[in-house]
Image (cartoon, rainbow, N blue to C red; front, side, top):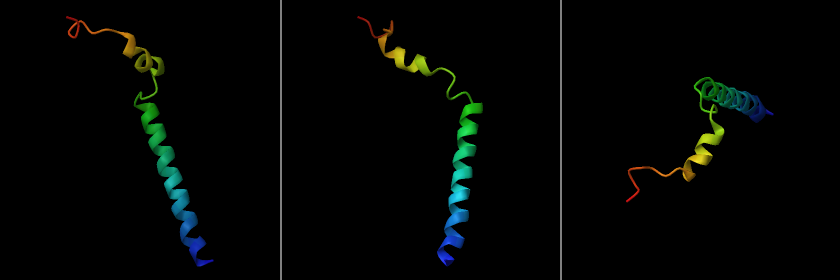
Length: 50
């Protein structure tokens, strides 16, 4: 029972830290262009072409 008194606040704290990190990355624009990175592999760079 004493373990639950420690583990529940730790789990809630880690969950809140994860949620805060998600909202921070969302506000920072991490998820703005999801298709751009996937399609960037098909674009040839002018510098690399012989």
